[in-house]
Image 1 (cartoon, rainbow, N blue to C red):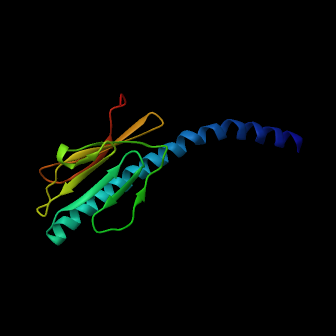
Image 2: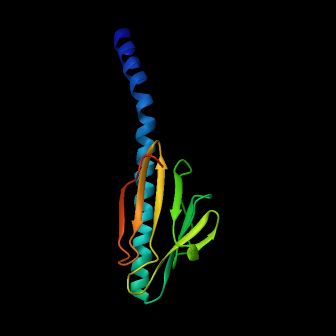
Length: 140
């Protein structure tokens, strides 16, 4: 019985440190999917209601909003955020927007999410408004 306890302790001691990166990766992928989903929702609302719709991201407070929803959505504080958008949609140092038009097009932009030395991006094509998720540059 003592041998079994020693072996299980050794196994646990080697496995537990490996969970940290897995949890960080899961948070990064989840946050990326949430942002992409919110952008797609905003595009759909613009086309459905025939009026502009906005995705607004505050990179300092780790929150975003979508036109038509009063809720403020939070992203994990462990995930670093970046937003590349047009100067007309930049509100202040940490806040910017991506605007979708009724025809499905957009102002375009990129949301960058970084955690545990991994980078994910969500790109919005300005011409088509298409939202795509992908791997980012590891140098960011």
